[in-house]
Image (cartoon, rainbow, N blue to C red; front, side):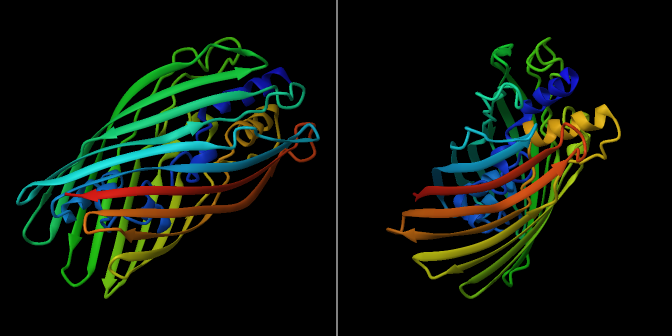
Length: 379
């Protein structure tokens, strides 16, 4: 039992999945993108697109700044040892700010800073079944996109990324304290505009290695590694605008199985599909979207103690089980220079069970609700 619960504690290290929906990755960054189900690889949405595809900032005509935040409210209920417990960590604030500008006729530059994680799991008060688990993981990314627009409709972009991470884990009041690390990566993107309302895009984001010294491998946790690498991603997108209507669709693959830390938990690569619709009336707009991501967690047959512990680890400490997300939102222009965007993301309850017929049978119920407010200024 001690080994199984030690494995459970290890999993809390990656608890950012509790608010991120596609594994530990937000379905979209920016209110307009989130309102369209996360679809935006081939569709520019102004300055916020610095965080989606660096090539898309070539649609900006002067200078634009966007800033706002997301209130995220996950509901996690886990049954273990016959007792259902609701995680007390159920409210999170995720900031985002971006600026982009055309600095020369064909050259564009931007800056984006945004939170990609900001919560954990809190099962304090339940030492016998849930081991009083408490964790905090915070990730912030800082990106500087540079894009070039060719005269034939092709735009390309690159964005170096600096990531800050902070991790703390406690189990039965034992832990090693909060540790921080910095990691670097890069995002590469391209968009081709056919000139008839149709565009295609592609983006690649490299993995980012993060190591939190002795937080996971300390004797209280006894985990396999202190490295938790944010996985690489690759995606393609389509967008078509006709009159006031725009339809966008993306496909993205997240390579969890090749990321240190996640591969130790036997996570699978994840397929993500997103589709969104936008109606633009000029000074106001409405948006709808849908996002589906396959579950990266692999539920193993409980044939041995290792499989039982791994199942419990993933579903109690890192329940990245949310699959379907329904989104909506809108925008309103108060003036030619100032506008506001709103979006809502809802993920209905997803139920996942493992270890049936053993003393460590576990069931996780996971739903999400998030609201984003964003302000934009052009000058």
